[in-house]
Length: 375
Image 1 (tube, helix red, strand yellow):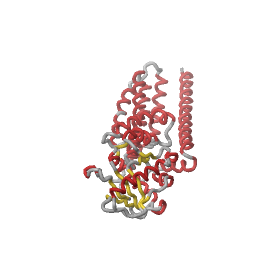
Image 2 (cartoon, rainbow, N blue to C red; image 1 turned 45 degrees about the vertical axis):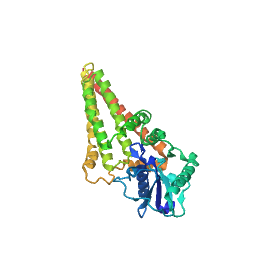
Image 3 (spheres, rainbow, N blue to C red; image 1 turned 135 degrees about the vertical axis):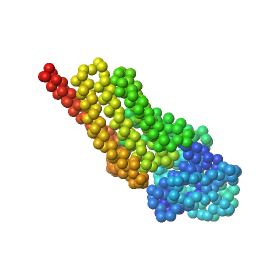
Image 4 (cartoon, rainbow, N blue to C red; image 1 turned 60 degrees about the horizontal axis):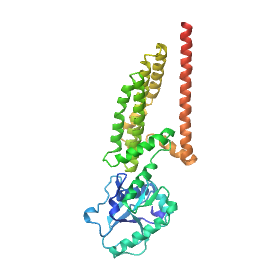
C-alpha cells in the first residue's frame, strides 16, 4: 500500500457512526477489514498502522476496537496524546463497498496530516470537516462504490447498495432478475441475525428432501409443489454467499460446502423427477420407462463428478483453491469483461441443455418406432 499510494499509516476518525451496523458489521469493523483486505491485495511488506482517533465526546465504553480473525495485515492502536504526520485520514462516516479501496484511493484526493497534532480535541472536528468536504466534492466519482454517511437514516440505502453488487458474473437471466432481488431482501433480514454462511447453506440444503418427497408422488400437485420448493431453494441458496461477502466471512471451506450441497441437490432432483414421471398413472408404460431411463442416465453421468466436490470438502487443506472454475471466470472477465463473460457462460449452458434435449427426443422417437414395429 505504501508503495502504490504513498503512505503506510491511516488515521480513522471515529464518532458514534463507528458503531452503526450496516449489513451485519459495525462501520469501524468494515473499514478495518476493507483496509486489511486491500493490504493483502497489494502485498505490503509491513503491516499497515491504523490509528483510531475517537471523537472526544464518545464514552470509553463505546470505544471498541475490531476483533476479527481475518485482520492480519494491519496493526490497530488508539490515538492518545498526539498523532504523528504523514498519515492518511479516513472516517467511520465513510461507507465503502467490498474491494473498493483501490478505486477510492486512486480517485479521491488524499486528506493527510501534514504536521504533528498535539491538541486532539480541537483537531478532530477540523479533520472530519476536511475529509467530508473532500468526499462530497467527488460525488460524481463516488458512483456505487462509496458514500459519506451524514445520518443513520442512510443505513438502509447503504445496505441495498452493498447487496446490489453481491451477485456473480455467471448469474443467468432467472437468477439476475428473479432470484437475486428476492434473495437480497432475505439476506438483509439474515444480516441482522448471528447466522453464519455455512449454517445457512446446510439449512437451505435441508429443505431439499421436502421438495423431493413431492416430486416422487408423480401427480400434478406433487410436480408443482416440488418444483416450486426447488426454485425456493435456488433463491435461498444465494443468501449464504451474500452473507459471506457482506460480513467478510467468505472462505474456501464455505465455497466447497456450498458447491457440494448445490451439486447433491441437483443430483437428487434429477433422480426424483425421473421417478415421479415414471409413476404417472396417465402415461403409457413405454413412455414411463423412457422417462426413468433418461433420469437414470443423467443421474449416473452427473454422479461421476461427485468426487470432485466431496474430496475437496473432506480435505484438511482449506487454503488452496481446488477448483479452477473461479480462476477461469476471473481470466475470462479480464479479457472479455464481466457482462460478455456472463453472456457466454449462459449461452454454453443453453446449447448444452438443447443438445441433451435433442438426444433424448431422438431416443424417445426411436423407442416408440421400435415398439410400434414389434407391436
